[in-house]
Image (tube, rainbow, N blue to C red; front, side, top):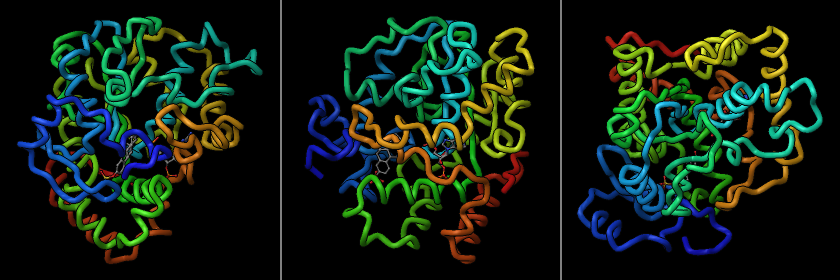
Length: 325
Ligand SMILES: Nc1ncnc2c1ncn2[C@@H]1O[C@H](COP(=O)(O)O)[C@@H](OP(=O)(O)O)[C@H]1O
Ligand SMILES: C[C@]12CC[C@@H]3c4ccc(OS(=O)(=O)O)cc4CC[C@H]3[C@@H]1CC[C@@H]2O
């Protein structure tokens, strides 16, 4: 892929010599949208995102007050960013005063920086300009988090989604991101690669399990939420997040207003999320598709769904983690 209209994370133009040297020693596989993806510390990534992760590991200095949102791709990142941004800024930007809330005119990805993405685009970023508490997001696995994130008292909110919905969301996202590259790639092959763990960001179960156990071992450090609970009881989950983050008392009315502002219906219909583009080339509308639980039924055949279910059963058996659908 080389066209300049292609999202930055699919390219390989800005790789440093250090990244190229490391990459040359890593296991590689044919990617879905890119010709090669690489396995670093157990996870598969594009060269661009891998470089972002390497720089992040080397340079990111967490502060005790930092809040880091962690997800697998397509597990509710955009929504979580909006909810937590609105929550933390509820005094500075009251939702009730309406009309001029940042979320009404800015895509959540521009309000909450994506660590490895920003480091890929601007390796010298230091995030010191962000107001305190700094709010950021990443897809980095627990194992690969920068040392300071683990050693500091910063907080992690992890959001996980039913893997079938996550896969289907990623499948449609990839098709929009690179229609030509994905046209001849059958869904059967994608499901197989997803279940084998050899898919962008995979293996997804290691990612989920690492944060699941981290949240059980250190509940004050890692809060585990699910897309499904957020969908079924957004207000209750938001109050749980607020308590975990030490946000203090929140009026019920404020909770209702934030939930409404950040709902799929509200965000997906805003002009900025219908026609905008992020600096990395991604169209903002690609982050909003159906926003439902169980939408996988429209895309996965019974046998493909069963294949993912078998993997879920095998990998999560005994963990205590159960996915609702
Ligand atoms: N406010 C919101 N409420 C619920 N789901 C949302 C949402 N904003 C985005 N989503 C959904 O979250 C998924 C994108 O995840 P991410 O933000 O991690 O990239 C998409 O799922 P679907 O493709 O199933 O619709 C998208 O529609
Ligand atoms: C992480 C990301 C969602 C996934 C995007 C992605 C999907 C598939 C790709 O091709 S391949 O590696 O499987 O061949 C590449 C990418 C790169 C961009 C990824 C997005 C960046 C931010 C989104 O959450």
